[in-house]
Amino acid sequence: MIKKLCVLFVCALCLCGFASAHPHDDGDTPDVNLPPIVLAEDGRTISITLDDMALYFAELDGKDNPHIGCCMVVTYRAFAAGISEIWGDGIPERSDIEFTSALVSRGNVRSAKYLTGNFKDMNPAHRGKAWFTGADGSLISDPKQDDLQHASRERSADSYRFTMTRISTGESVTLTFADHVFPEGYFELRKKVEVEKTATPEEILRYAEEHALVDGHFIDKSDAWLFNEISSVHPVVVELEIIDRSTGKVVADFHYDHWHGGLPHIHEGEDIELMARYIDESGSVIPLYHGTRNPGAAYAMSARIADGAPAGFARVSDHGDHVHIYGDHDGDTYVVFQLIDRDTGAVIWESGRIEVEVEEGHLNMKMLAAIGGGLVLLIGAGIVMMKRRKE
Image: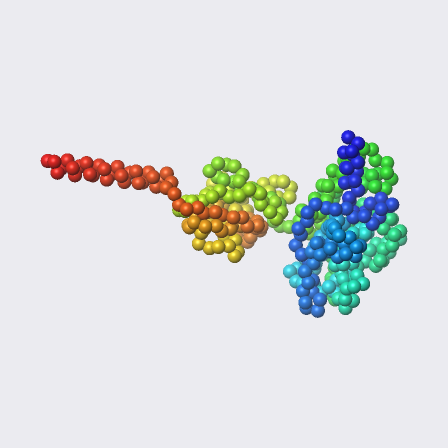
């Protein structure tokens, strides 16, 4: 029991920004695979990933094991969301970005400075601006030890406030985390565990569990779920279950960026019929259109052959709440599944691709029945002809 609590205590300390004695720590997060942030430097585009940042910081520290801390993820998410809100699908010049953060931790400060190009070995001609809230409430560009310690002691939901500004136009957006990101009483518990060191073993265990939950939110949830200022008119799919309609069983499951399981094999000349459960961020199943059972549903299931996948082996047809995949020729290809807005036909969400295997044709029951019927007729006709000859 003691060993278990010690392990959980170490896990609990992985939340970005530790006790005042450890203001620089930024704990590891689970595997993260967020899209890259794309910036421009005098028209030349650069693509930045969390892995790039982790590798840079590891080399800076002389370490061989790059890691992605949760404060890195938080800053990365806020930075990317701010760009999306101001530039839309455009690519901002790095030097045209001003990023201000009320969250102050080692991982956060380093990440913001990296994204705005403010490390000494980066070209000063392409630097944006990064600001942080200091211990006295003023904006500073280079937080010191006292600022980090103060920020760790006073951390609250209000600390998760970020402002992205387009310097050339003055346009800006401030992003704050929604209340549901953090469990009730989370920061009070954090203070007892990390700052005051007065938490009971039970509180340490609860904090470790809540910390893991919050970390998951930072990684998996959409911008609309995380930030108060961003709204989404459509549900956000976080998981897709594919069901073989012939058995009613889930055969494949897509979560975030990968599949588990696989689709049933198809024989040439046959098809498989698949249904789906699209699950949103609240854990609810998104209703799908069906002509009689659910004619008012706003969304429908769809599938298509994946881009670049071999053609001619299979084809797909959509039927609202299910799809058919037909096996045309022996071979392998790939499909992706989509959630469609029925009013506009727009693709709301699309899965990664999954393999479809079409096997060499065989005699199915319908074919056997047809052949059997034909044989009966032939035999019958032969018997009749033989009788006539004898007559």
